[in-house]
Length: 236
Image (cartoon, rainbow, N blue to C red; front, side):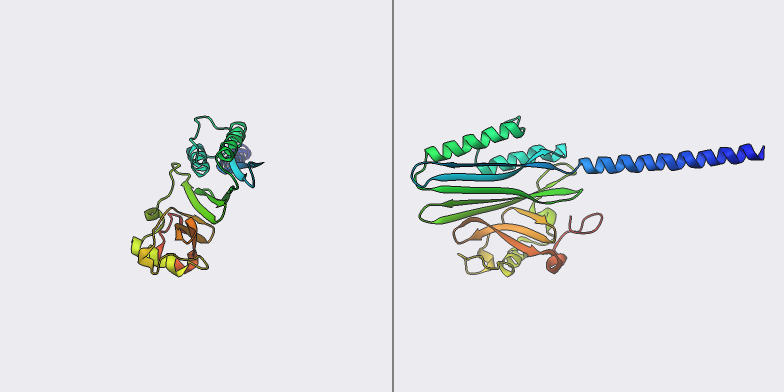
């Protein structure tokens, strides 16, 4: 009788251990599925005179469903084109070639270079950055940053990252302007645009000379007191 009871208790322990192991494997697999799979999509075409168009896009082909459509729509905004309802990798490649062709029909001796890349991702969010360079007799740069929450897919705004007012954000931008050429003389004249973060940095898009949008990179560890803390610590 004692042997049977001991065997029963042992079997229960083995089954419990097995179930815990299965749950850990399932949890790990589910967590892995939340991370984006991307493909590099690029095109390069020449037009009249010195006109050219080149683009290199890190395009999301799979990932968190709550985020995927919003990232694709943002990429279409960068390309200055309306986002189709269905936009898989093949459709996007065709769209990019169409955008390139239409650009070259309208310009002579102008060039456009576009780079979009995923610059940060963890289990809570994903960040993409964009840089567009237009050049003829002068060179204009447009930078943007977009961080999307995996909780519901929305794009993070300044008040979701910072715990200070806009005046303080402008002062931080001014302090961390680095080598950006300024068109204004004081932080009060800056404009706080889109925001996001990569590992160790907070990015704020604002004005600069010959930029339609410039990335101000604020070092997180030095401005931590102005950043909202995430539920599990850290800055998101």
